[in-house]
Image (cartoon, rainbow, N blue to C red; front, side, top):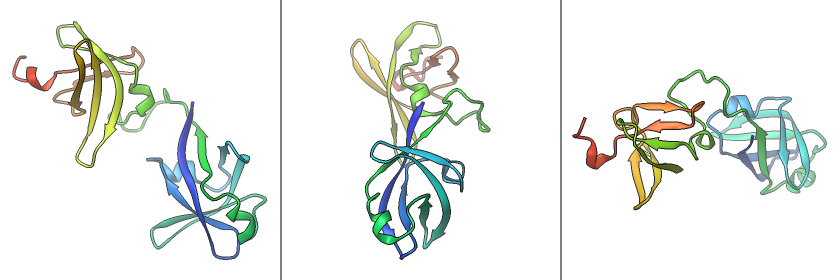
Length: 166
């Protein structure tokens, strides 16, 4: 699946590097030298250099060797081909797109709704569950979402108003 992983910012220096707005939780994996990223405007872009300067990721791309050339990439969105079903090192780490569309069921097995979105907040993520009565937001914590079965396309949820009922 094609996922947005970054956006190219302004040119940096004279050697064809650009600032990158990272939109991936795996920047080391996505932005390594030799990695190939996709863009709608320029097709495939191959990373030729990468470094962090004052907390900002700087990348160079094949065929873009000076400031004027790299400036043509400003605001270009970068995409990576990602297998959202691949084994993850952390069992509690899921791709948002793998969760969207999963059936949300109660512990009794009764269908509660469908995961429509994952809202990323500083404190914790929320699952936005589309139900027959509207949308319910459930904190994405093990106490309220005890089972996540990506292969089976289902999550078990304990809605906050039912959290005392076990």
